[in-house]
Image (cartoon, rainbow, N blue to C red; front, side):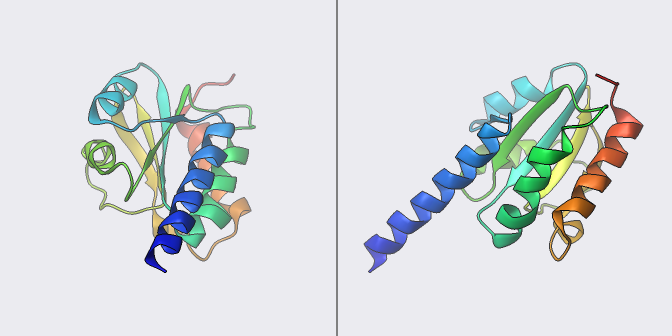
Length: 145
């Protein structure tokens, strides 16, 4: 029974990873990849992905659709909480003033935190409200494409 659960979880994780990569996000799996990505000039949207239901039903769809907008981040990246632990821990080190939460979004500019959409702003909300919040931050911090 435990073996079947592991196969199931591997499938869930694989699906979650593929879904966000298909939306154009680069997966960061090591602390080195995080530091390299976060050192880039411009704005970077980070999805802190997870296997919880609100990630699949709200956060990942919002991540995919929010970037179809006049203003959007220069870079789209993701770390997977609970899976790529060292990369996630490294990323969270950049989110000064915000407690760890997943799923969540961080918007960085030149490697510095601008704002976050935390789990409590995702869980129990619909994807459209999360998309609207992200796009409001894009208006504030990103350049027109």
